[in-house]
Image (cartoon, one colour):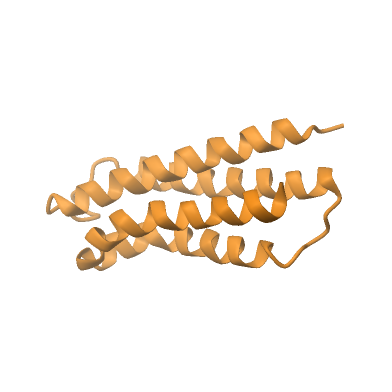
Length: 121
């Protein structure tokens, strides 16, 4: 039997890794770098992908353990998950977005946390 705490820790590990990987890429772009010039690009991309997977597995695991089904508040969290998934590509493809992304990524994380805390337990 899987525990709620295990899924919660998995979810948080994914969140921390997601913020670290996006932050690393965004700082590189803010310093004038490109995707091609980033020697850590593949490593950041892998970290970003693993982070997204951990967030998803942990989140749905918590839902399963609580037997909540698929409540409506999950939809905005999934939308935020999709936006975070596209943020890495957006930072490299459109460098002008790097500065707004620096602020948007943690704010989106805060909104997702609010939905989870106030509606999910």
